[in-house]
Image 1: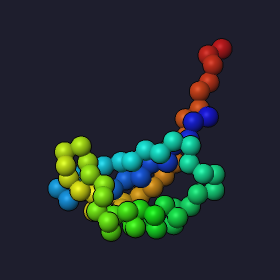
Image 2: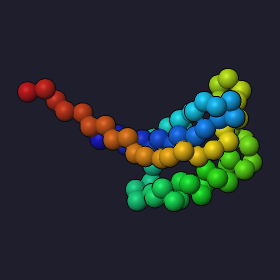
Image 3: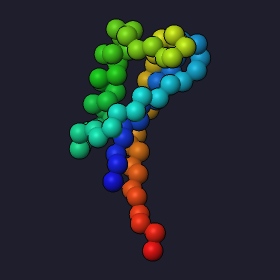
Image 4: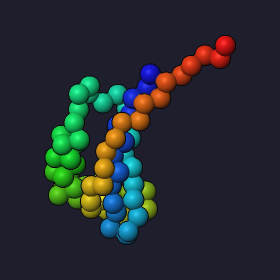
Length: 71
């Protein structure tokens, strides 16, 4: 099973970006992610590919992918 933390952020150009972090710590809460992202956003150090700056936290969730063999 593959687990990825997905963090959606808003950009200063009105668009959105998503950060993907593989294998997050088990038991991680959205509040922990929110606090960490707010600290990063305050420093204005995340840029999208088009040069836009991330300026807002939208949500975080876990994407869980499980492979199943065909019968």
